[in-house]
Length: 257
Image 1 (cartoon, one colour):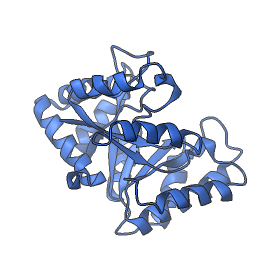
Image 2: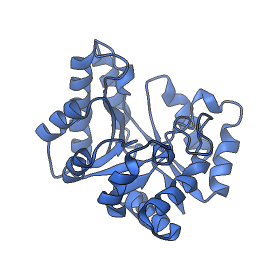
Image 3: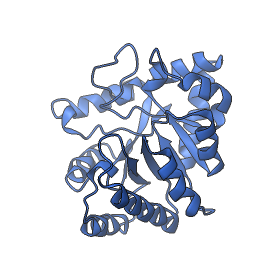
Image 4: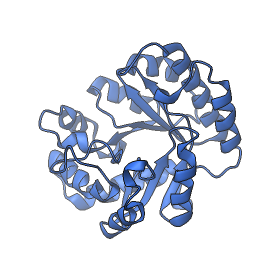
């Protein structure tokens, strides 16, 4: 059994074959999919997929940092109301993204801090988006450090020092298709970190692993990433499957369903 801990398979890129893409994942042994929300508009499609595959799809709730508005109070009020339903398995996808623009940095920081505190209060794992923003993200997480703060650095591509910082804060590293890219520095990092701190993800429809790079990603490709990780670590793929699945079950409490 494999788990895709981060997929947007509810997105418009799957409008023509959404159910089929989930069936392909199931056929590949990927039996559980974590669906992080992006904004208020994406939630409806996400829940449609959850209702269609209630034993396989598990929703998370937040506003993606790229979708945070300058006046974000109403956005967070909506997220708070959604989380209050108790129907979500994580707070995410949240974080800080400075790749596209730094104009709303202050808003992103405050919204991220709010999501962090909400995750702690609800004792839910936090799905953290980091892009060109490790220093800003760590500044928030270090200030909000708490025994109930846990989660994953989604699509981790940082240095070994940054990986260790995240691990010290109680976070797993989400490993995806970037591991398979020819010029990726991630193999060196994961060799030093080891399996006990890793979970697998696709970030579908983005960042498809080789040999599908440049095409639409989907959850069925998790075993490809797992095989690549096994090769990097020099271990059997069965060990990667077992350990990363156990890590994901533990983080998201999926062992309770």
